[in-house]
Amino acid sequence: MSALLELRGLSKRFGGLAVTQDVSLSLALGEVHALIGPNGAGKTTLIHQVSGTLAPDAGQVVFLGEDVTALGLAARARRGLARSFQITCLLPGFSALENVALAVQARSGSSFRFFRPARGEAALNARAMAALDEMGLAARAGVPASALSHGEKRQLELAIALAMEPRVLLLDEPLAGTGAEEAERLIALLRGLKQRFGILLIEHDMPAVFALADRISVLAQGKVIASGTPDAIRADAQVRAAYLGDDE
Amino acid sequence: MRWRDASLPLLVFAALAIAPFIGFGQGHALTLLARAMIFGMAAMSLSLLVGGAGLVSLGHAAMLGVGAYAVVVLDHAGVTEALVVLPVAVLAAALFALLTGAVAIRTSGVHFIMITLAFGQMAFFTTSSLAIYGGDDGYTLFSRMEVAGSRFLEGRLAFHFTCLALLAGTWLLVQALLDSRFGRVLRAAQQNEVRAQAVGFAPYRYRLVAYVIAGAIGGMAGVLLSQAAEFVAPAYLTWQRSGDLLFMVILGGLAGPHGALVGALAIVLIEEWLAELTEHWRMIFGPMLILCVFFLRGGLVGLLRR
Image (cartoon, rainbow over all chains, first blue to last red; front, side, top):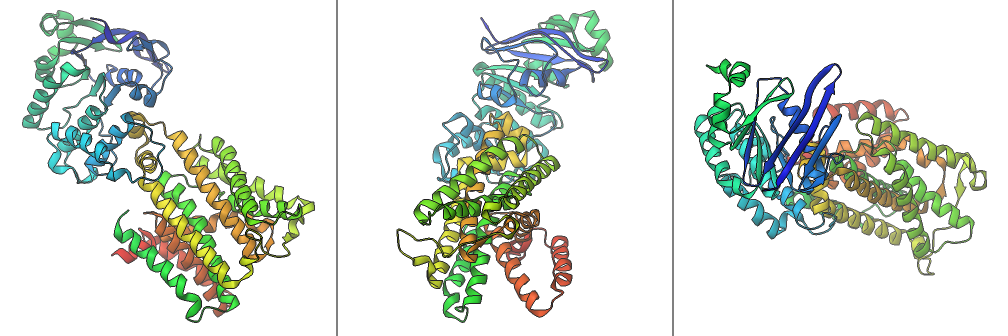
């Protein structure tokens, strides 16, 4: 299977600090590729380079066969590269529904339409509602995003990402700050969704990672020190020393 | 559009419509009301930028100035037909907004304020140096424009209702823009630019279009201002004027164009009222504005809603 997303030799320095060093990895349709590593390993910096918020110093990001390294966040999003944020990134004054409807709007026709009230567009609202429903948020559609609970905000982030009909989903700690029960529900949901696209996942919750991932890459000091199936990673001595060992 | 947002402007328009018949029909009162309505249009166009797009422009008076000076240039050339002058003036202001906005919108925050101020000052000094159009002294128009050959705008009531119609039209337009798909992208990018980008919207083009539309409406207000006074001077383009407009928007409230509408009417009328009371009216006006900023977070319309 050809890769949806391919990183080729990405490198990024902040001053004297090499936060990403020659990282190459790929992601296929229906695959969950998890990135793990200790704090400060450069996981979020890497996601920023993949999503287009940060430009790498060297290397390429190839998405659906196209070199998108020079494109920004918005242009990559339009091509089907959706991301969620580690720190909740929503439109606080918009209702949950309108947060999602904006994402639907981005995928359906021009937004240079000046007179018809967007809030009344049934087609946008229906698809936004479907995405909310998928995340179990349908009952909260009319609530301003600022008034949602932390867990609901996480769900709303995912609903927005789903509504973008992405080919690749970049999830930066989607479970951060959610309760055990909520986390379990989200994991089940993600497992159900992954056939539709590829998921590049950053997560600290190791049971969740091992439950979801088809492939795991371990990042330490900006370098990929191991990459393989969950079983292989669990058995890798270097990984245990660098990271997993800390937990045990 | 929510009904409670619409009820206030409709009330204001109704009051303005009956004002000439309930004791405000003399020349001075009508001149004052026309001025209030014209600044209402300008403030609403600015509110599209400040409240809708998060672009705090300190150069909006330049848009009015370009509109007004388009009238002067055409008048000097002997063209005084509104059906020609108005479109040309509006297009000139839109073009000015496009050229300056294309640069200014690449910046944000304080830098955007400074760069719009700089463009505004450039326009101000340009008009001051146009000796052929009176320079600092300004340019006196011999009469108001004709509309399709008729001298209809010379009528006091006709001018009053022309301003009122354009005021209502401006409100409808700005409100519709904010409620549209376009406005949704603008508002989203104002609340959280990264979020707007992450779903695929690069805000620049949307902001630029908003800037051009606001400039065009500002140009229209400038044309009306020139007609109300039958006189145009560089004073129309001072940065203090831009500051006044910004104050109208903020005092009225940023929740929508109705805030700017109320803010503009309030400031023009209170200014006039205080000036009648005392020569030192600014001593009262200044502290009043400060108190408003302190205690009215949602602006005047926020006060009415409570």
